[in-house]
Length: 191
Length: 104
Image (cartoon, rainbow over all chains, first blue to last red; front, side):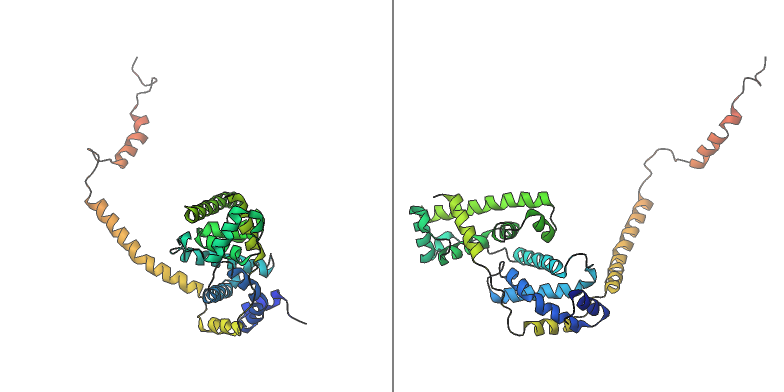
């Protein structure tokens, strides 16, 4: 019978560090999927995930077991991803005149006949990735958690440690920031 | 261009683009190797280091404040002698002439 998370954690806290590996094996897919929302390069993704596990190991004493280990770990992962965004926010500004032909064609199609511009298109995915890269760290985090992952405000507050009113304020600002970027993009393309 | 509709379509595209949960080969072994290489956090040691580091600045501030209070001139014209004030207060009742003692 496989040991439970609580048993593995207790063993690690008693000094058997090798019992941490099953936890790493079990939850790494989830942590990788989260990190890939915030970093494009695979080397950066691996760095983020390693950092998450390092922090999890060092802070394991602080895990009280009131909530599932996965929730605690995902909170740590979101914090680490946010720190990564803040550390890499210097080179966000890229002009929209550098859109690829694929992206430009998709935007043209959207401008003339919005219904023909499919959300499933690769170009749409590239465009939204470009927009997300240019958002400020809190805006990107909120848009990712709230709009893309469709989490509730309460869940986001739990993951980020922000109060519910602060999440709402940041969500309002993030949407406005995204609209501003879209306006800038359409202006640069068509003027 | 309808920006609200554009935003909606792009968010929908992001939702459909689920990130991969693929874990690189031997990633767990690399993490465990890194954990073994890292020294375990000694919280008491950290506290002790922080307190020692704070001791020198605290000593400096203490010396500065002592020098300031030693060398700063008195701000009041007359010195405040609290012991004299206490004597005056306690003995004030004894100095008062009571109506019973007053000569008729």
